[in-house]
Structure formats: C-alpha cells, structure tokens
Length: 432
Image (cartoon, rainbow, N blue to C red; front, side, top):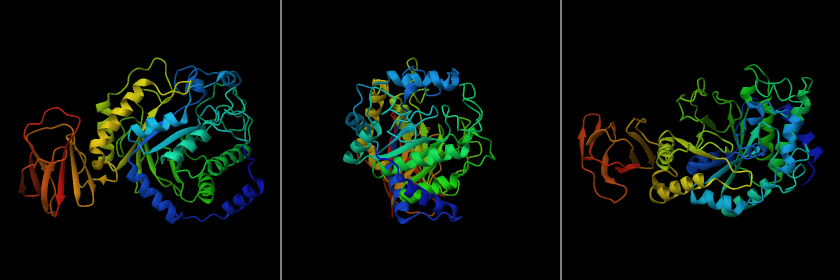
C-alpha cells in the first residue's frame, strides 16, 4: 500500500479552509447522478470482524465487548473462501449495477490496507490481503460501480471524542482529541479515493451518534472528497434533509417519504437522487441464527416500489466469516435477476411515474412510456389519473396483448379483468 502524500494532503486542507459556501457539482458529478438513478439496483455488503461471532454488526456495542478484546478477533480472521470475482458474478446475476461495501464500520476495523491505523485486514490478520483492492479490480473489470460505506464514528479509537451515544461500554477512555480523529478520517478517505480507481460514491453512516449541534465539519470532508474525485457522489445516512455538499439522499429501511422504521421522522424528501437501503433478513451483518429472510417475491416488489418512488434499492447481504454469501441470499438475488431479465426495461433507466404510489402498485416512466406495476389488484378496472395527456395504446408488457381502456373524466380506466396472483402485472402505456 502506498504512503499518503502528506504534501498533497496539506495542500488540500489549505484549500478546504477557503471552500465556497454554495456547493456547485461538477459536470462529471451531475452525469454520475443520472447514471446512479439509471442503475436502480445495488448490493450492500456488510462485512468485517463482526461476522466471526455471527451476531450482527453491532455486537461490540450490544455486548459491551472491551475494544482490546474485540481487536483479538483479527488474529483469527482468515476468510479463506473469499473470491472477489465470485462476488461480482453473484451481483451481476442479481441484475444489480453497483456494490456498496463497508470499508470501515463502527467497530473501527478497516477492510482495506490503510497507513492510518494498523487495525486493518492487511496488517492485523493472518489473511493479509486487501479485499477492497481485489473487489475494486473485479468491479472495474466487470463494469460494476463501487461505492464505499464509511463510518463516521469509531468504537475502538480513543481519539473519537467526545464519546457518542453508542459504544460507551467498550472500555475506551474519555480523553481524546477530535483533531486527531478528523485527520485520521481525511487520511483514510484520501486512500480510498486514490488507491482503488474511480469510486462511484462515499456512503457515510454514524452522524446520528453525536448531538444535533455537534460540528462534524462535514463540509470540509465533502470538499476533500470532491477535490480528489469531483464525480464521486456523497450520500450520508444521517436521517435528515440533505446537507450542502451531498449528491444523493438515502432512506434506511424505508421508502422515501415514509417512516415505518422510525429513522426518517425529520428526513424530508429532497431533489437529489434517492436510494432505499434494506436488509434481506433482520441483520445487516452476518447472523448465525437469523433465518427470517424476506421472500424473493417480497424483495422484487420492494425493488418495484422503490423505482415507483423514484429511488434505487440497495439490498444488503452479510457475508460469512469465510467470505462467502449465505445460500439463501444468493438464491434471492438470482430470483431478482431472473425477474429483471424479463422486466428490467420497466425498472432500469426509469424515473418515478406520473401517478403517485398506491396500495395497488406504482408507476415508472421512461420517455413517452409509462409502466403500470399492479402489485395488489383491487378490481377488474383500474383508474389512472392521467388528465391532460393523450394515451395512444395500452398493452400487457409480458406478452404484448392489448389492454382495453376507456377515456373518462380525469384520466383513463384500464379494463384489466380478474388478475391471478403474480409478483407484478405490468401494463405498458404509450403516450401520444
């Protein structure tokens, strides 16, 4: 691993001091935002030392494991079955277009070779390989965009101070230095953005650990990223309205505008590209006992509803400590991929359609084509409020058979007939 160029870092930091107040994204960034929206489906990967106990990614906090004892897990971390090419093949089979992987989670362990701390997979484990480098190479070869999850909080470092709401029982002292921690983060972000090729996005998490008035100096961090890679998108899972300098907005375990998970109470939907992140079972990280997987049909429908809400779906998998995806996850990804082979045109490259989401389903749109996704048929007739537009034709997307419709005040009435149970009934509507 190359040593960070300190002169370059100092120069960049001096530029940040005079950073402009209004963020103006580059042309490359704007293009990447559009590409991000077009991709529609990504795979989230939560993987780290926490996979070894097999009790989720928050085990260090949940069990109040002393940070020094937790660090000993690294001595036995040897993911002998890890194969970046196989991971990427599984992602492509799912029909996903990007990967977001945890480069460093809240436990503080880095899954890449970093000069900022010896607590990383290259130096602290017998495995000694940079899995992020191997995954980056495989992604670049196969045309899969790579995003990095990066935790803003750290349960292992004493310079993460003041202590936040979490990780208070893991044995750290309470005399840290925020400047030191801030430099550490900027150093790691420099490595992530200069050692692994073009990166699609940095996906932050953990800002919620400190009080609302805490100064994370996020704009300085954002400007640092955009200086290194102007096209790199910045997404922050802070559960708030978008902040200056961000390029996308994510919603944890919820569709945009909803708050069923309790995380998005103050997160108004902004104008930036949208994303929903969700788990297949109940955990983000690998769990030995969590077999509560959503069905393939549920996951496909969630992807459809996300697209109908003008959002991407980032669907998570927690690899085992040996570096393999659980078979149940692979089965569901492949089922999603098989569905997308048929219906991908109604999802990829679309935007949320002109009709607001309803219990019966959603709409997506691409140019002059509207795709009506009927997920829960309610009647043999479906009213679509398409007032002021001229509908030329309606047909079933799967077989091309025409769907009769009647023009009525305020829109059209689709004569769908009685529909059998299916994952999704899609009607293609061509506008004139």
